Amino acid sequence: MVVLVDPLCDRERCRTRVRQETLQMTPWFTTVMCCKICAKVDGVKKCGRCQVVAYCGKAHQRLDWAVHKAGCVAPRKVDDSGAAQAASVRP
Image (tube, rainbow, N blue to C red):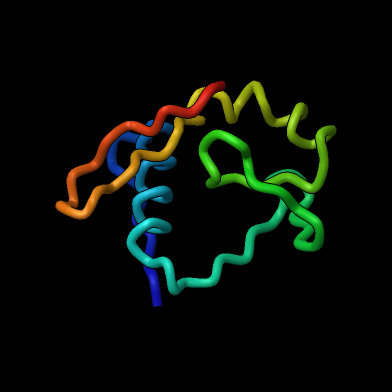
């Protein structure tokens, strides 16, 4: 069982980082994602940058972009020593 806890600062970027780090720490964990707008499960695709939010199509991605862009950050890469580095992902 994995329990996600939202940071106290209530910033969307902090929430995104927590989700990204949790997904990196548990590679054996199967993630079932649903569209953030309509909750559809089949045929959804993750956000290309943050990999934390999913949408069933471009229409719903565009509909949510005004809200999602505030917290959309590229995941940090974790090397063998456990040190996190910012990923170089083009927007």
